[in-house]
Length: 238
Image 1 (cartoon, one colour):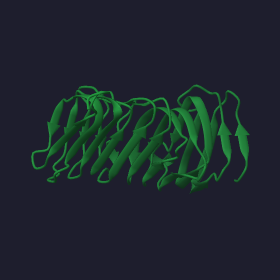
Image 2 (cartoon, helix red, strand yellow):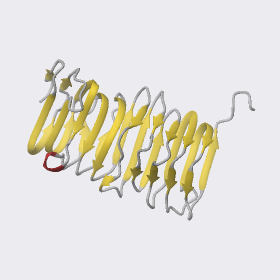
Image 3 (cartoon, helix red, strand yellow):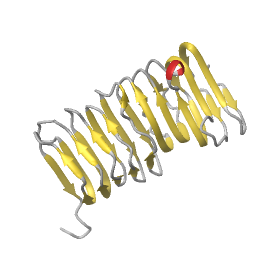
Image 4 (tube, helix red, strand yellow):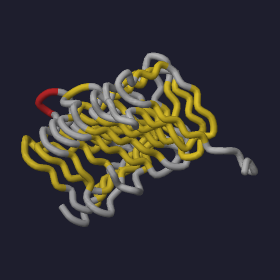
């Protein structure tokens, strides 16, 4: 559908592809529902998303089992997701890369390909892990104007990039990049990593921690490669 607007008021929205492709073009789905099933887009092959507004609730992109999205999940050009939480269960790559997405939380992600999540404002908190499915692929999670907070959640990939105005991680969280590199970019904010970063990458940039005011590290393992750290000098330093 193109140019279609669906407003469910405070109710929920269900889009069920019945094992077919889901193409939402530039349509708009809107609800003020504050539950974990505010918007459900499920049971499809590929899913190309339109505009979705569920600022108080959860946008569910595929569910466990037969109601997952078996192919790639993408956003159509010039569309955006505004949601309290997004969860994903996909058999393909997940590309939520709109520069105008506004996401508060990223829940559990199961994927079959690379994972890209972009949040434009306010920071982003992980409330679920991205460790299930096919994880031998790249992960990029970024947020603007606020911190990226991993909490105790974990991420597995073969290359991991994490960006926020500050990046935090609690004990119990593991970022495992396999044989790939890890980048943690604080965008001139504080980086506080109390969990684990690990990679078998053997290059001079196996783990890069950069653009931070202060850096506090937890367990960092790059036995075959190099850990690089760059701190932003305070104003007037030079």
